[in-house]
Image 1 (spheres, helix red, strand yellow):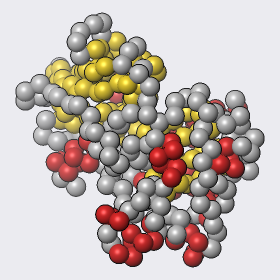
Image 2 (cartoon, helix red, strand yellow):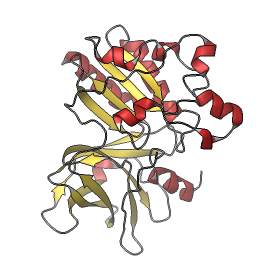
Image 3 (tube, rainbow, N blue to C red):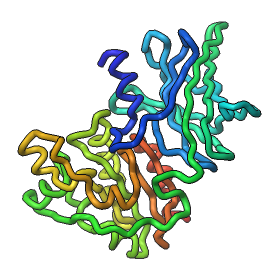
Image 4 (cartoon, rainbow, N blue to C red):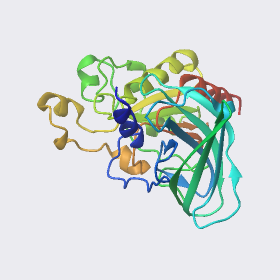
Amino acid sequence: MSAALVIAALAVSACGNGGAPLPSATPQRPELTVIAVGQDFGAGLNRLPLAVLMADGAGVIDRAANLEVTYSLATGGAQRKVDRLVWWAWPVLGGVYVGFAEFDVAGIWELKVTLTEGGRRLSGSAFVEVRQKPAAPAVGDAAPAVATKTGATPEELRLITSASQPDPDLYRVSLSDAVRSGKPTVVTFSTPAFCQTQTCGPQVEVVGRLQDRYGDRANFIHVEVYDNPAEILEKGDLSIARLAPAIAEWKLESEPWTFLIDASGRIFAKFEAFTTEEELDEAVQALLGA
């Protein structure tokens, strides 16, 4: 994939479902291109995935120790440092850096990235819009107990998911039942066949492997973004797609999204855009031990 396509794909991180694109800006002729891989940030602590590329489009890969990421209100104010910055490789598009930022108030925030390497300091920036409250459920919120489709046979599954080889274990229980089951739940919202960034299929596979590992202790569910995947595939026309009711109920403006729900039915953790098996596994272990 060309550098231009990588930048374009990461810029939408998760295929948008009508959400406005993030405001973004960089200095003229920036030394680094910085892309916030996400669009739903709220006042408070946020997981912050970032793609960082050189000016020629080459990825800045696995150099977290050489990067400093700071953030401040675009209108001015104290600079703060992004915490716990880690590089995560992706199955497509290279990968991203993930850290955590505490946005005090709603508004436009500027992210500044500095790469120090070989005696050089390269910099770049991006802007993100922070709402007072994110659109999607926040950590601590009650998980919307919306019914989702279930099935087990190939005929049933083709009406439920756009995955080419669906794992029946991810469609055995409705999300509404899972939230009320008294067991923890991991749910991923994605559309494997229609995802613009090609990360939705890999995300469902990650959740499937976690189900193999922890399925006796928690519910694992995939919710297809579109309500009529078989019809879309048969006609080859995405314009006839209808959003699944759960997407509207959860107020998701992009995909993939993955949520961890505790045994009481509240959001324990949330992950916008593709999230690696290692990062999710760590979160699932924390969920099961909570």
